[in-house]
Length: 200
Image (cartoon, rainbow, N blue to C red; front, side, top):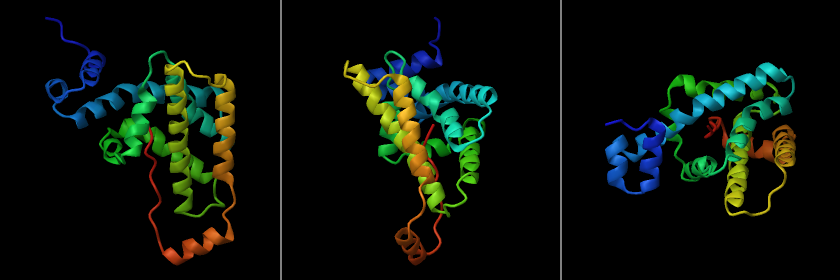
């Protein structure tokens, strides 16, 4: 008997929607979730690498585009539910899923955060890390909303317009100056750990 591929097992277990199927194929729901990311992230990271090599980004907008465009493209595939799945994990605060990923899969996102942080020297920590995490989360949620709308044949902007507008908004958010009110509030709270992005 031919064993189903990892992709086929994921589809079977996730589509079945019952615990015995998940238990049979993966042992637990947590393992199923991890398998989904381990299946998707190599392709996403390779696409990011190719974009960086081709475009040689030198500014904030270009770096953000090279990182999030592969995720947005994935949401355009027929029958895709990946971004809705990621958005659901973020909504439920399942950061532990990403913490368990192999280092080679999570490293590109960590490298991206460091690269972007170097371009946001006017924003102090922990605000800098918080902004980057929030920007990546917003990109996922905006893309997941588009994914769901397309699945129900709703109206969406042309993809190029959607990407451009989203990038404009994210870069504006990342680059915004820190107000005196926020600086004062930060000073009152004392040292804080920067936020880590919950993002594929």
